[in-house]
Image 1 (cartoon, each protein chain N blue to C red):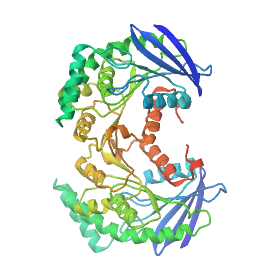
Image 2 (image 1 turned 120 degrees about the vertical axis):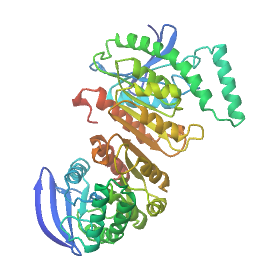
Image 3 (image 1 turned 45 degrees about the horizontal axis):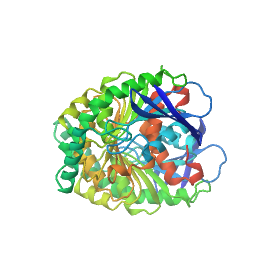
Length: 252
Length: 252
């Protein structure tokens, strides 16, 4: 793990790093506090580790609950080069969108391919971050993300026992992803955009139904997947606090 | 309005009253505070104004957020006599349940009949309660309830402009109730029991879809309608606080 730069603003220390060549960023409380749990934040497809909404949610987790939050660029996203085969997927996706064709099967296959590559990168990043003194490696780890980050998150939650609570949503219910969801057993908060023009609500309902966890909540909201209400982000932060923080700290 | 008795326990003053012969109960903060908004609490079908879960949620609203909360017995419930025609409905419902027949159309018609009688009773109760000095009649009023109380709540929210935010769930999506839901425009939090043996999830999805409000959230949870997770009740209290309390008081 290599640290590249560090800035502090509004109570949040932002540290850029790389792990095995994958660029990432860690947001931490700027006051010397006891070690605190970590939340991994996946960015949506087509965006990157410092997407606006992601950074705002990270700052909320850090300043309100004292979490550390971390993001990495997914394969072919942000500061990473896009491979020729990923570029071909993107071309095909854009062609189908222009032609008004259904995107589900193309996006699901592309995202599954990225997710299979992203899971070992997240696990290596988690190894490196948990070795830092400020991060409480004895507490379970959270994960948050929609669209592409949901493909990654289901797979990460099914494969990685350190993940203790996840917030996901807005992904196509391919047979492969439904299978992965059945193997998830940690608490899940699942967001369903009720009126997304590309991701049908049936996908969200089928994925929620498939999730193997005893505690799973489906939260639907009007509009497309970009219009998550701010109170849902705040509720998700409380969900993470309930499952990741020691009991005395989770009452906010 | 006649007050009958008053007790105080754990920070909550409980006052029994009648309005126009309908028995009710008001829960209020026991410390002299500024006038605070009111939340009306409907009880489920077959239960009454002091059902255990209802009283617990009322105490949470009073002690955590400083609300007043009030419940009345629905027609034919609690301390009220059941009419011969209501008794015939109940007999028919119990016969269908024993025979393993679908209950939806019977329950929906029975509950609609009760709800039509209950709405004017709630409005008269609201008139009386808002005349009390402790209740802030300038703030919007909340309403909460499942099953029978959802039939009542949709109709009350559509008819009564003082209602400003409602939490509902677990009702049969009859054509009549879908029509009423389309006329509701205040923020709604709607609970969907994902695995209820009597109320199919399609009813919840259809009702949520029909709600006319710009802000509407669907929260699904595993199990039957009796198994609402405690964090959903807490989240609903925050939803009420967001919509009913002045801004400076709604950050809890």
